[in-house]
Image 1 (cartoon, helix red, strand yellow):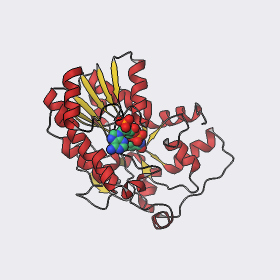
Image 2 (spheres, helix red, strand yellow):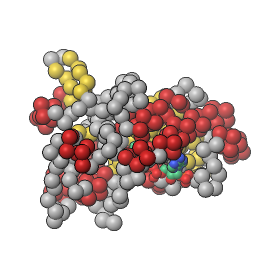
Image 3 (cartoon, protein in one colour):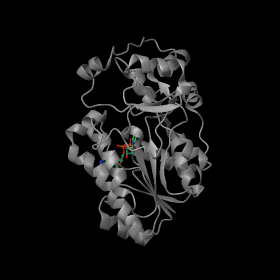
Length: 315
Ligand SMILES: NC(=O)c1ccc[n+]([C@@H]2O[C@H](COP(=O)([O-])OP(=O)(O)OC[C@H]3O[C@@H](n4cnc5c(N)ncnc54)[C@H](OP(=O)(O)O)[C@@H]3O)[C@@H](O)[C@H]2O)c1
């Protein structure tokens, strides 16, 4: 039996759907039933129910966006750092392997390949870098699991949310057996205020940057596959291979959904941060070679994006 924490959440409900589809025996737990955020309560539950594996899809995300985390720093730290640490200790004490949903938002930028050299660029909005993304995408590479996070409390600036996600990874490392699955900007065909494609359609003005992104159902399948395949424990970037700019996403929305509205973009970072955002945003490209190397199959970002828009289900 698999124990699923956080099934009431946006990502947790996708795990629940996929476990049901696989006809895998599982149990969901909400804090309203059992306060699994407390080490001793969770340990007792694990010892009594003896799950073979635990999925942690619980955590603190700011709503409507990451700026909200700046207003509840204690809650953000509890949900994203102390919670994975408590789960790690409880699972280790009960001898249960587990997987944790982390985030790619602990990185900023991408790697640029030039004359056999690789250099990290944190701000891809610079015009000369944006031109490389558009004209020579083969010269762009993503962050791998062995790259140290560069959008964290240790490498500032960062948002408080990102800082706690990076610290959460540190807090669970070396304790028992676990996967860290890094999700990035979830999207799919179901119109929802949490869906990236819905957000882009509803923004008054759009912020253009380059990102790797994760189709929600593809993400949970890939995560569960790491366990099903008994891939080595450790960190895995779990995005659809490749990357997209927000402008490319808007172009596809216009082509496939043909919305009545036109899209306007923020002129630059200065305007975006002055008028629309409070805390720094992470925009980054992720490398998924490690995930693919253990035998997990996940479709490319272009295919996942086109498929979601072609099967778009308005709310
Ligand atoms: N959505 C995104 O854009 C995104 C992107 C990258 C990574 N992630 C990560 O994915 C995980 C799940 O995110 P989500 O979008 O599914 O979040 P969500 O919709 O807010 O759901 C999270 C669930 O976590 C549980 N929880 C446990 N402790 C909590 C706490 N201290 N504060 C708030 N909720 C708590 C709640 O379930 P119960 O109360 O029922 O137990 C809640 O329903 C998080 O770790 C998040 O950092 C999300």
